[in-house]
Image (cartoon, rainbow, N blue to C red; front, side):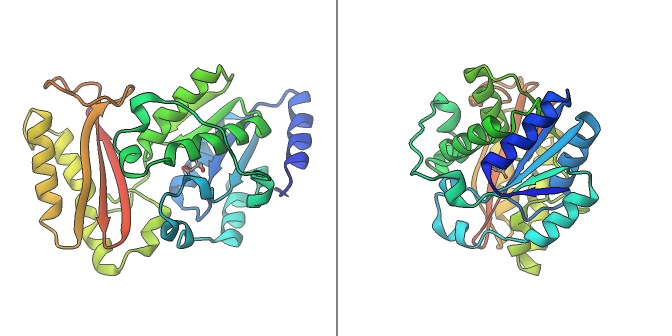
Length: 279
Ligand code: PAF
Protein backbone atom coordinates (compact mmCIF):
# COMPACT_ATOMS: atom_id res chain seq x y z
CA UNK A 1 0.00 0.00 0.00
CA UNK A 2 1.36 3.41 -0.94
CA UNK A 3 0.88 6.29 1.50
CA UNK A 4 0.56 9.67 -0.23
CA UNK A 5 0.39 13.09 1.38
CA UNK A 6 0.73 15.44 -1.58
CA UNK A 7 -1.97 16.16 -4.15
CA UNK A 8 0.60 16.27 -6.96
CA UNK A 9 1.91 12.77 -6.07
CA UNK A 10 -1.59 11.36 -5.88
CA UNK A 11 -2.55 12.87 -9.20
CA UNK A 12 0.54 11.41 -10.87
CA UNK A 13 0.16 7.89 -9.41
CA UNK A 14 -3.52 7.73 -10.31
CA UNK A 15 -2.84 9.04 -13.82
CA UNK A 16 -0.34 6.19 -14.39
CA UNK A 17 -2.93 3.61 -13.32
CA UNK A 18 -5.59 5.20 -15.50
CA UNK A 19 -3.22 5.18 -18.48
CA UNK A 20 -2.77 1.44 -17.89
CA UNK A 21 -6.55 1.03 -18.15
CA UNK A 22 -7.28 0.30 -14.47
CA UNK A 23 -10.68 1.11 -13.02
CA UNK A 24 -10.26 3.36 -9.97
CA UNK A 25 -12.44 2.73 -6.90
CA UNK A 26 -12.46 5.48 -4.27
CA UNK A 27 -13.52 5.47 -0.61
CA UNK A 28 -13.39 8.91 1.06
CA UNK A 29 -13.16 8.75 4.88
CA UNK A 30 -12.32 10.87 7.89
CA UNK A 31 -10.35 8.02 9.48
CA UNK A 32 -11.08 6.37 12.85
CA UNK A 33 -11.95 3.42 10.68
CA UNK A 34 -14.39 0.69 11.73
CA UNK A 35 -15.98 -2.28 10.01
CA UNK A 36 -18.44 0.03 8.24
CA UNK A 37 -15.56 1.74 6.41
CA UNK A 38 -13.87 -1.61 5.82
CA UNK A 39 -17.01 -2.93 4.12
CA UNK A 40 -16.68 -0.01 1.65
CA UNK A 41 -13.00 -0.81 1.04
CA UNK A 42 -13.83 -4.48 0.44
CA UNK A 43 -16.60 -3.53 -1.97
CA UNK A 44 -14.17 -1.24 -3.82
CA UNK A 45 -11.61 -4.08 -3.89
CA UNK A 46 -14.21 -6.39 -5.46
CA UNK A 47 -15.29 -3.90 -8.12
CA UNK A 48 -12.18 -1.90 -9.08
CA UNK A 49 -8.61 -2.58 -10.23
CA UNK A 50 -7.10 0.11 -8.00
CA UNK A 51 -8.48 1.09 -4.60
CA UNK A 52 -7.81 4.60 -3.28
CA UNK A 53 -8.88 5.62 0.24
CA UNK A 54 -8.59 9.16 1.61
CA UNK A 55 -8.24 9.89 5.32
CA UNK A 56 -8.93 13.56 5.99
CA UNK A 57 -10.87 15.08 8.88
CA UNK A 58 -12.45 17.89 6.93
CA UNK A 59 -12.66 20.95 9.23
CA UNK A 60 -15.14 22.85 7.05
CA UNK A 61 -17.91 20.27 7.46
CA UNK A 62 -17.98 20.57 11.27
CA UNK A 63 -20.39 23.20 12.50
CA UNK A 64 -19.51 22.40 16.12
CA UNK A 65 -15.82 23.10 16.92
CA UNK A 66 -15.96 20.70 19.92
CA UNK A 67 -17.08 17.87 17.64
CA UNK A 68 -14.10 18.61 15.37
CA UNK A 69 -11.64 18.77 18.29
CA UNK A 70 -12.86 15.49 19.78
CA UNK A 71 -13.19 13.61 16.49
CA UNK A 72 -11.24 10.38 17.07
CA UNK A 73 -7.91 9.94 15.25
CA UNK A 74 -6.34 6.47 14.92
CA UNK A 75 -4.08 6.86 11.91
CA UNK A 76 -1.64 3.99 12.50
CA UNK A 77 -4.47 1.49 13.15
CA UNK A 78 -6.26 2.91 10.09
CA UNK A 79 -3.24 2.26 7.88
CA UNK A 80 -2.96 -1.33 9.14
CA UNK A 81 -6.64 -2.01 8.54
CA UNK A 82 -6.48 -0.51 5.06
CA UNK A 83 -3.44 -2.56 4.11
CA UNK A 84 -5.08 -5.76 5.39
CA UNK A 85 -8.24 -5.08 3.41
CA UNK A 86 -6.85 -4.42 -0.04
CA UNK A 87 -6.31 -0.66 -0.22
CA UNK A 88 -3.65 0.21 -2.83
CA UNK A 89 -3.22 3.93 -2.17
CA UNK A 90 -4.10 5.87 0.97
CA UNK A 91 -4.18 9.65 0.64
CA UNK A 92 -3.60 11.49 3.94
CA UNK A 93 -3.35 15.21 3.18
CA UNK A 94 -2.87 18.00 5.70
CA UNK A 95 -5.43 20.80 6.00
CA UNK A 96 -2.96 23.16 4.24
CA UNK A 97 -2.60 20.66 1.39
CA UNK A 98 -6.37 20.42 0.85
CA UNK A 99 -7.07 24.10 1.56
CA UNK A 100 -4.05 26.28 0.69
CA UNK A 101 -6.55 29.16 0.69
CA UNK A 102 -9.86 29.53 2.49
CA UNK A 103 -12.27 27.56 0.30
CA UNK A 104 -15.01 29.69 -1.25
CA UNK A 105 -17.01 27.24 -3.39
CA UNK A 106 -20.76 27.39 -2.85
CA UNK A 107 -23.04 24.56 -3.89
CA UNK A 108 -26.80 24.66 -4.12
CA UNK A 109 -28.75 21.51 -3.35
CA UNK A 110 -32.04 23.30 -2.67
CA UNK A 111 -34.16 21.85 0.12
CA UNK A 112 -32.06 18.67 0.19
CA UNK A 113 -29.46 20.56 2.23
CA UNK A 114 -31.84 22.45 4.49
CA UNK A 115 -33.75 19.52 6.00
CA UNK A 116 -32.66 17.09 8.75
CA UNK A 117 -28.83 17.21 9.07
CA UNK A 118 -28.79 20.41 7.02
CA UNK A 119 -31.21 22.13 9.40
CA UNK A 120 -29.27 21.00 12.50
CA UNK A 121 -25.79 21.51 11.05
CA UNK A 122 -25.83 24.65 8.87
CA UNK A 123 -23.06 24.64 6.24
CA UNK A 124 -22.29 20.97 6.80
CA UNK A 125 -23.23 19.75 3.33
CA UNK A 126 -21.46 22.59 1.56
CA UNK A 127 -18.32 21.55 3.46
CA UNK A 128 -18.85 17.92 2.45
CA UNK A 129 -19.46 18.88 -1.20
CA UNK A 130 -16.32 21.07 -1.30
CA UNK A 131 -14.03 18.31 -0.06
CA UNK A 132 -15.66 15.50 -2.03
CA UNK A 133 -15.48 17.50 -5.27
CA UNK A 134 -11.82 18.32 -4.67
CA UNK A 135 -11.07 14.68 -3.87
CA UNK A 136 -12.97 13.50 -6.96
CA UNK A 137 -10.93 15.92 -9.11
CA UNK A 138 -7.70 14.50 -7.68
CA UNK A 139 -8.56 10.80 -7.69
CA UNK A 140 -10.67 10.79 -10.89
CA UNK A 141 -12.48 7.65 -9.72
CA UNK A 142 -14.70 5.50 -11.91
CA UNK A 143 -16.55 4.29 -8.81
CA UNK A 144 -16.96 5.97 -5.42
CA UNK A 145 -18.31 4.17 -2.36
CA UNK A 146 -20.44 5.74 0.38
CA UNK A 147 -22.25 4.21 3.35
CA UNK A 148 -26.02 4.30 3.53
CA UNK A 149 -25.69 5.27 7.20
CA UNK A 150 -25.16 8.88 6.07
CA UNK A 151 -28.27 8.72 3.94
CA UNK A 152 -28.65 12.45 3.34
CA UNK A 153 -24.96 12.79 2.46
CA UNK A 154 -25.31 9.94 -0.04
CA UNK A 155 -28.35 11.59 -1.69
CA UNK A 156 -26.49 14.92 -1.88
CA UNK A 157 -23.35 13.35 -3.36
CA UNK A 158 -25.50 11.68 -6.03
CA UNK A 159 -27.02 15.10 -6.76
CA UNK A 160 -23.55 16.72 -6.86
CA UNK A 161 -22.33 14.16 -9.40
CA UNK A 162 -25.41 14.64 -11.59
CA UNK A 163 -25.29 18.47 -11.31
CA UNK A 164 -21.64 18.52 -12.41
CA UNK A 165 -22.04 15.72 -14.95
CA UNK A 166 -19.12 13.79 -13.43
CA UNK A 167 -18.49 10.33 -14.94
CA UNK A 168 -18.47 8.64 -11.53
CA UNK A 169 -20.74 5.83 -10.41
CA UNK A 170 -21.79 6.33 -6.79
CA UNK A 171 -22.17 3.00 -5.02
CA UNK A 172 -24.31 2.93 -1.90
CA UNK A 173 -23.24 0.31 0.67
CA UNK A 174 -25.47 -1.02 3.47
CA UNK A 175 -25.06 0.22 7.03
CA UNK A 176 -22.92 -2.12 9.13
CA UNK A 177 -24.30 -2.68 12.63
CA UNK A 178 -23.09 -3.90 15.99
CA UNK A 179 -24.70 -7.09 17.32
CA UNK A 180 -27.39 -5.14 19.17
CA UNK A 181 -28.23 -3.11 16.05
CA UNK A 182 -26.35 0.14 16.75
CA UNK A 183 -25.06 1.56 13.45
CA UNK A 184 -21.26 1.58 13.42
CA UNK A 185 -19.83 5.08 13.68
CA UNK A 186 -16.46 6.58 14.55
CA UNK A 187 -18.26 8.54 17.29
CA UNK A 188 -19.42 5.35 19.10
CA UNK A 189 -16.09 5.15 20.96
CA UNK A 190 -17.07 8.35 22.80
CA UNK A 191 -20.15 6.70 24.37
CA UNK A 192 -20.02 5.69 28.05
CA UNK A 193 -20.93 2.04 28.78
CA UNK A 194 -24.42 3.12 29.86
CA UNK A 195 -24.95 5.37 26.81
CA UNK A 196 -23.66 2.60 24.55
CA UNK A 197 -26.25 0.18 25.95
CA UNK A 198 -29.07 2.71 25.59
CA UNK A 199 -28.09 3.56 22.01
CA UNK A 200 -29.33 0.21 20.70
CA UNK A 201 -32.81 1.68 21.15
CA UNK A 202 -32.31 3.92 18.11
CA UNK A 203 -32.12 1.08 15.60
CA UNK A 204 -34.90 -0.81 17.45
CA UNK A 205 -37.18 2.20 17.03
CA UNK A 206 -36.37 2.53 13.33
CA UNK A 207 -36.87 -1.19 12.77
CA UNK A 208 -40.26 -1.06 14.53
CA UNK A 209 -41.16 1.91 12.33
CA UNK A 210 -40.36 0.22 9.01
CA UNK A 211 -42.08 -2.98 10.14
CA UNK A 212 -45.32 -1.07 10.68
CA UNK A 213 -45.41 -1.44 14.46
CA UNK A 214 -45.87 2.29 15.07
CA UNK A 215 -48.85 2.94 12.79
CA UNK A 216 -49.43 3.77 9.14
CA UNK A 217 -49.06 7.54 8.85
CA UNK A 218 -45.73 9.40 9.02
CA UNK A 219 -46.96 11.55 11.94
CA UNK A 220 -47.97 8.53 14.05
CA UNK A 221 -44.79 6.63 13.22
CA UNK A 222 -42.54 9.56 14.08
CA UNK A 223 -44.39 10.35 17.33
CA UNK A 224 -44.14 6.74 18.52
CA UNK A 225 -40.49 6.39 17.54
CA UNK A 226 -39.59 9.63 19.37
CA UNK A 227 -41.53 8.47 22.43
CA UNK A 228 -39.81 5.08 22.48
CA UNK A 229 -36.31 6.54 22.21
CA UNK A 230 -36.87 9.38 24.67
CA UNK A 231 -38.20 6.93 27.29
CA UNK A 232 -34.54 6.16 27.91
CA UNK A 233 -33.03 8.89 30.10
CA UNK A 234 -29.69 8.63 28.29
CA UNK A 235 -31.17 9.52 24.90
CA UNK A 236 -32.60 12.72 23.46
CA UNK A 237 -34.03 12.81 19.93
CA UNK A 238 -32.97 15.81 17.84
CA UNK A 239 -35.16 14.87 14.90
CA UNK A 240 -36.89 11.92 13.31
CA UNK A 241 -38.25 12.45 9.80
CA UNK A 242 -39.78 10.28 7.12
CA UNK A 243 -38.73 11.53 3.70
CA UNK A 244 -38.58 10.51 0.06
CA UNK A 245 -35.42 8.49 -0.62
CA UNK A 246 -34.38 10.68 -3.56
CA UNK A 247 -35.71 14.21 -3.05
CA UNK A 248 -35.62 14.04 0.79
CA UNK A 249 -38.99 15.81 0.83
CA UNK A 250 -41.23 14.89 3.76
CA UNK A 251 -43.58 12.02 2.95
CA UNK A 252 -47.10 13.34 3.23
CA UNK A 253 -49.47 10.39 2.70
CA UNK A 254 -49.31 6.84 3.93
CA UNK A 255 -47.64 5.36 0.83
CA UNK A 256 -44.21 4.82 2.35
CA UNK A 257 -42.74 2.55 -0.35
CA UNK A 258 -40.05 5.03 -1.48
CA UNK A 259 -39.47 6.56 1.92
CA UNK A 260 -36.73 6.37 4.50
CA UNK A 261 -36.94 7.14 8.21
CA UNK A 262 -33.94 9.18 9.42
CA UNK A 263 -33.00 10.00 12.99
CA UNK A 264 -30.47 12.07 14.92
CA UNK A 265 -30.25 11.36 18.62
CA UNK A 266 -27.99 12.68 21.36
CA UNK A 267 -26.54 10.22 23.87
CA UNK A 268 -25.03 12.76 26.25
CA UNK A 269 -23.00 15.00 23.95
CA UNK A 270 -22.44 12.28 21.36
CA UNK A 271 -24.64 12.80 18.33
CA UNK A 272 -25.70 9.59 16.58
CA UNK A 273 -27.52 9.28 13.25
CA UNK A 274 -29.22 6.30 11.67
CA UNK A 275 -31.89 5.50 9.08
CA UNK A 276 -33.87 2.62 7.59
CA UNK A 277 -35.64 2.22 4.28
CA UNK A 278 -39.32 1.36 4.16
CA UNK A 279 -38.80 -0.87 1.13
O1 PAF B 1 -18.67 10.48 5.48
C1 PAF B 1 -17.58 11.00 5.75
O2 PAF B 1 -16.74 10.40 6.43
C2 PAF B 1 -17.27 12.39 5.26
O3 PAF B 1 -18.39 13.20 5.27
C3 PAF B 1 -16.59 12.41 3.87
C4 PAF B 1 -17.50 11.86 2.80
C5 PAF B 1 -15.31 11.59 3.92
C6 PAF B 1 -16.24 13.85 3.49
O4 PAF B 1 -15.37 14.43 4.41
